[in-house]
Length: 211
Image 1 (cartoon, one colour):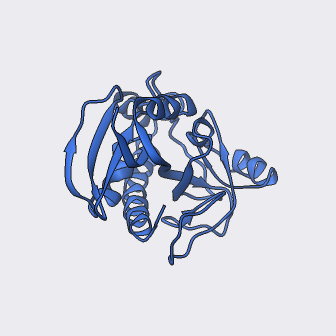
Image 2: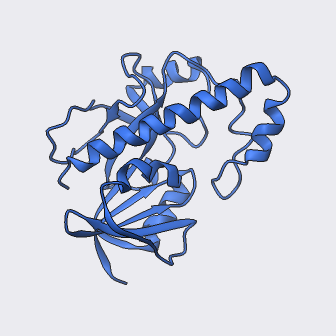
């Protein structure tokens, strides 16, 4: 198996949208994961793998390819009330960069953290942000971009829509959103807009990094 200079792992391809716009010669590659691309970043070969939400899915992605450096990127939920949408959180060892970021504890959850009360409990444990993949990638770099805030809860039940393969069922989300359409559909639209912002900010930050 060829060794890439950097192996980037996320849960969903949308988390790579902002990052890959800075790469050249991006193309699909056949690997035993849900989605894989390779390309050139600053003259170096990089791989981007998305394999669904959860630490186990991230671990499977890491076992599917090899990289001299492994970096887990993606969206996170804010636990620190000071964080805004698109803010970058880098726990542990940070890549070399001149761009600002927030250092702090990243807590990995096996479920979507959906309520303010749950976020406050994790904040009390020392968390700055929460994700669902980092526990599966010990020794990796972690670069996360905030997509939901510490002082808000989800009305949509994302955990009920989470499939065994780590993907979210759009049909289930729409089905349950129809029960409270004036609350849940606007929330889905708002979250989509926020993840687009988070992906763009993530890409801009990573482009400044040396790993």
